[in-house]
Picture 1 (cartoon, rainbow, N blue to C red):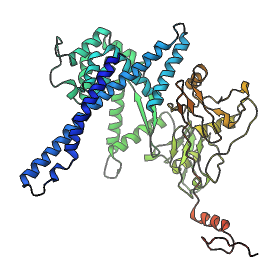
Picture 2: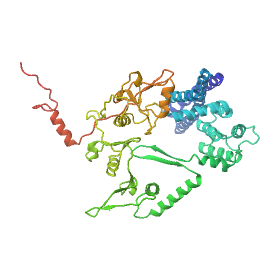
Picture 3: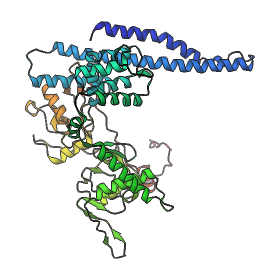
Picture 4: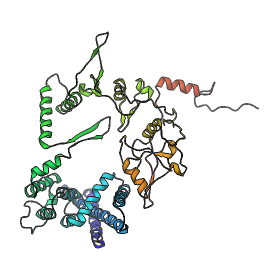
Length: 506
């Protein structure tokens, strides 16, 4: 990073500060309410001035945010460049890979973002500072937002240098042979700017779209992201024709189900149709009749057939740990259960998973005072399965501060090596994912001490300490009738609640 570039960006931010402050004072200083004896027309003018000042402040704030983004980019690129300069020229390819991981991890921890986001930021920063001078200049001047800059980097990623330069010049250089017409790029809504950039890219890409599509189709995948309230997002990256066909087919099926007797919305019907097709394709529903004539759910090929799911969608058999408070499992309380790799789920969902034959359901003993699972003690080097399961319950994910990997591939690891006297106990164990396990053994990133209930923190090569995410254990909830019995048992005999115990007479 050129020091002059960062200094210029900082100077632009400094220049924006008093301008923004003036607009804020005008916009929030109550100008319209000063001088109550002013005519109504004057009051209206003052209100108009105050409203305009608020909009001017927002516009200046957007320009300042763009300049701050430019400064962040320059600092990230500067940090990466400094680390590169300090590296030994004789380091092996493996050492360079580990150093790159360490740089990304440091950025992630400093900014409190995920490593994926930090990696994307580092890529964008290096691209902007080395190969996209017009985009960085526009960002530094406040002429376009960070979203616009990322779109430019993203859409030019697979172009050769000449094609990327032509794309950038088309939208940002008014002296280009064929500049973009219409309003400036930074004044377009980002989604519309992306559409324009993508259209130009498709038309001028040196590689045919068929070739590019064949290459991109190899990256097709399905992704899963937990969300709140017992819900999750399931998305698929597919060829456009397949995705459009799936969307149209589910929409057509959902519309066919609509009618006076159907209370579900089209959106809900579409989700239920897709879930039913995915969970029942190639399977036969086999409801077993009971003695009273009602149907009973059976398990066929790992799928529970029955009406338990939302909208009558079958419930999949759980293949993960499900921790359910006993009283919640019995229906006496409504405490949420914990689905490993996801988080809290409604107790009704947990009861359905258990009732449908969750093969990996485990009873987990918890402390009745604080709700923390009880530790399992071991003294051998080999980490047994029960202790590994307890690590999953304690840590829930990779313990690295910027990682959210819930994979079952996470590796139980001694914090203090067994060869150096480290015991095989919960307080000396963590479960980093393979990536951060490798980082621990090949860099200066080191885990800190753990405890029976607290995962280990980490110390970075720069000496910064990042504490662990503390588990939010809570004591179990008791039904009112049981709580009353417990209160009676803990109350001293012969005393009313709240009456202090009297000392014995001498």
